[in-house]
Length: 518
Picture (cartoon, rainbow, N blue to C red):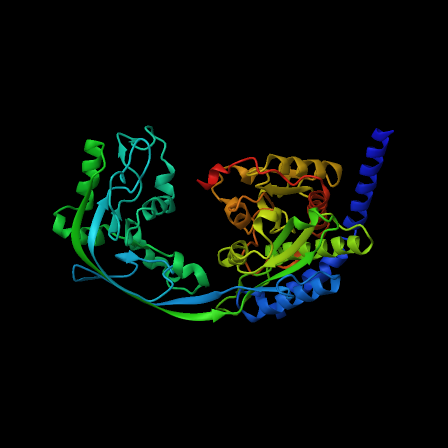
């Protein structure tokens, strides 16, 4: 008797979910996406009028569905966002002027005017801290400038770090070195970059405007300068050493070669700063269970895109990420219909379209640092970024109309992946491709959309993605190329997964540590 009752209830719940999933359809999606990708929205560039139009449109949709405005009775969460444009970057070393993009470069990550002189330096080899080889052991870098080589020490074809011919992450991830050195509180870091001389070929990335969250100024210490061998050799004049001699010494002795020295490094950087109007758009659906409603499922997509280029061409971003934003809106409408008919989810659901993804995941970073609902109450994030096309790796394949890349579902929670697969098998039965979960993925897709700002706070995530295609980040990413039947399958899969997460007895357990974050 009780067994039959359980089966009956499960069947009824499936039928209920299917009822509201069916409201996610091609016709509604086309109407929404036609608005978001129209030329009137000017490519939805962050901080630009087109993005503001998109934000107002999304707000109106949330309002029409009956979602609650959760940010002090507003649907908008403003970002403290600044537009920073480099003006001057001047450096002299021991009185000798250095040429920007020939002798050194500093990315636009210098977010304020800087006028400083440095005199105390420590050369710390390759700047590596590992079990087999450690440049940092016993060093005092407090208030001094750390100077390091690129790569890692190689002797007879083998790395002193790994002990074999395989290079370590210290060679390919300079941020790993910067993070290790930063813990020792240096005043600045100078890194050898043998490719500085190539920067003149494409100077634009090093001189263009950057968008920066207001608090970033507090986190950009120490300063990091990438320098040529000539720059560093000039710096090393008092030590009577040059870069090649030091690296040869390390290879010969198989030991670090650190030493302090005196020099004069003068920086004079100036920037122009402009405050921008940018906002996330949030709509909230309160859960029906008196206890579980305090837990929140967050469903996200980014509504910004690339705006307009210097030629006046508009990047309408139909797939990236008009398709995901449309998905969030359609899911929001489906869930609110369910609640209006007495079938609302037990847990609360936050529908959020974020801004600034294309500029460095800025909107989701702002939310994760300034959450409207406590992060400890956030059970998971389902992030939708590009679900309207067939990616280049699936072109011509038999299952090209029935797949989705599912990224990160088991990085933090084994149960979340199991839930995802069970829901998919019961409903859409799409082919779930885990290609981008590979830690060796050269594209590092796991790190490249807004879910990551939840994952870094140990919140389980799933990132839904159709893969890169020929119109990615081009003016040709238009609505005419959206595969709406495939879009519906994918959006409904997200809905079914969200429905299960919002109604099941237990939240996904965080039972794993993501090794790729180390």
